[in-house]
Length: 96
Image 1 (cartoon, helix red, strand yellow):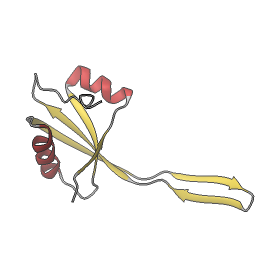
Image 2 (image 1 turned 135 degrees about the vertical axis):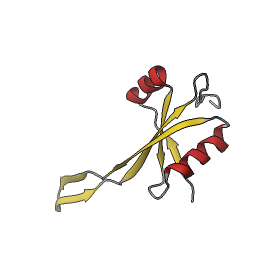
Image 3 (image 1 turned 60 degrees about the vertical axis):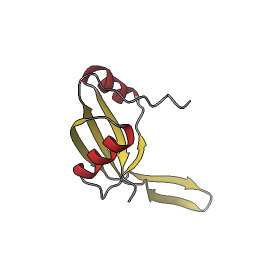
Image 4 (image 1 turned 120 degrees about the vertical axis):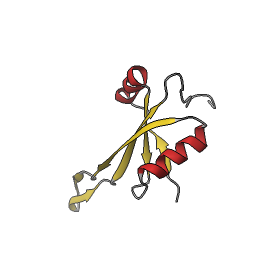
């Protein structure tokens, strides 16, 4: 199971990073906090202090077409907020 899907890079998360040294990731919905912590520590070589997780249900979406109204649902996902030790950082932009 691939635990980490991708990092979240939004304005709200960047404010959390600057103020509280927290980072956000989209993770596998079946992963628990221990697996997420282990994946972060092995991938980035840092010490994780805390892991907070949130589950999001996909939004209902509908649109009108020539054939009529089409309704569906956006994908559900799980988000993890990672708190790091003071002085440690993750550099997402080093490979660009």
